Length: 448
Image (tube, rainbow, N blue to C red; front, side, top):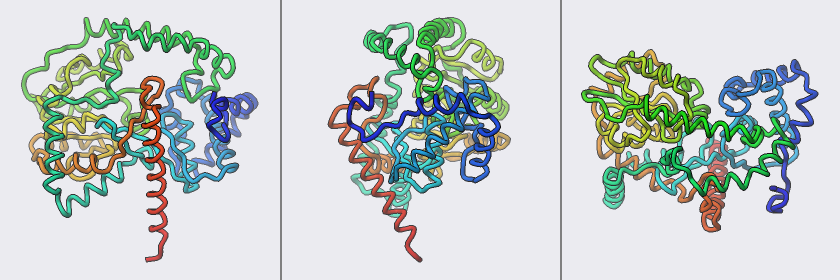
């Protein structure tokens, strides 16, 4: 398909490469090559990459190792063949994580697009666990000179509108619909792709590891059916809708599999264990409010929720409950990397983060790298000072002043992303980002 568009000078077919390499690969040689790559340093663990990949993680372990060794060879050969200044791509799977690791070692700029909780605002990360560096620079500069009256007015109005309208991040818009209510447009789109799905599966099968096109086409139909059933059962028999009275802290469940959790915070992906640790760490008299993510309706089975409900001081809420309401009633919000941290800050609530937040600079966030420290951190967050309004405005102003104004996401699901005006904005942003990074690297290379 990409070749037929004639929009690209050359297309490299990963699935074709894997089909030619993996069946005849020797497992010991694959392990040895991956070990040598790991031991060279500055590379995420291969096991971490496998666990974070939503497709390869389903494969038998030996098959996953063969796949990943062939992926590394694919990127090695590609980067040797063409001299790149930059790579633009998400890191939503192990294939892309391998590419980032090799590019980082070769000092090739890697731009990871990352939409913000604010509509039409986007940054590029330099690393999977990185921060929004332009925003951090503006934030630090604002700390030296303070905001102008105009900047203060804009940020203050933004916060006021956020609270009044109960604004949700734009990437959650598609998640608000219930699986019980059919989306005719989405259904038609998926029906029109049935022939393509069968063709892709017949051609590439398990070697198509960059998307679900490598899975048997009938599996999504079965999974969607089960998702509808699970959602109906959970809403009827498991979830609560009325927020418990009394002191409380809030932990929203995160989407999984997902880059923001599985790649950015790979050692905090067991959310049930994390919820148990929070429940053990809370002061007596407090309740932990856990709410399912709107994007995970019907995705988790009843056993997952029953494990959470076994904890006596934990309440499990339906994804239909308004997160703004829960945050407003909570004393502290805990998150791994979720956008609920942004919402909590804008309400002046203390935030405890287990993973790296893109806007986790300054002193608006309590960091918890070790769960054994959580009881002390929770006590500080509950009894300590709340985020000052001036700091909230400084954070908001920094994002508005530094983010690129564009839409990023799935153009199949959101066709407006592929419109000419937005594509032009994306192109301009990529050029500016590359130029900025090249200038920064050149400045760092100058002798002191």
